[in-house]
Image (cartoon, rainbow, N blue to C red; front, side, top):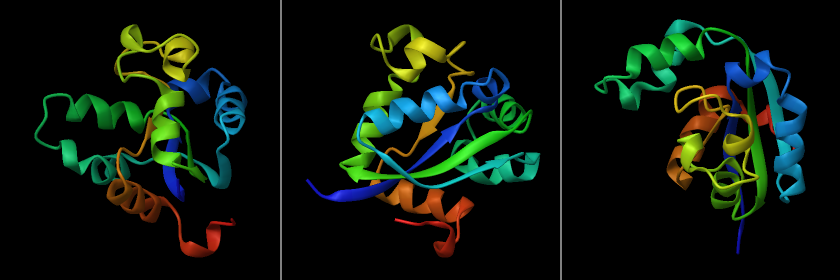
Length: 140
């Protein structure tokens, strides 16, 4: 398996409950390295741009309002098969369907407030990383 990078975000519902350290610990314990990280207060315009792929979906307005409601932690993770590993550690989008011991099973409050986001493919990872980080901010 190849070493790859993926994008990870700790959402406002989790940062408000001081779960950042616990979530990062789960990611690192799974063999992922944090090679870039920053805490941001996403503006509504940034949320709309970041989630533009969902613009036509009925939940878009609610999603962008939620994501701009408080601070998030955006990160670049690196490791073997990092995209799949991050998604495995996060668990299913719907916390009711997430496997026990995953981040969403343990920390999500609902399908909308599900604690974390992670890239789903190499192309998405590249785009999402570039949205939040310049190359000099990523230290491998």
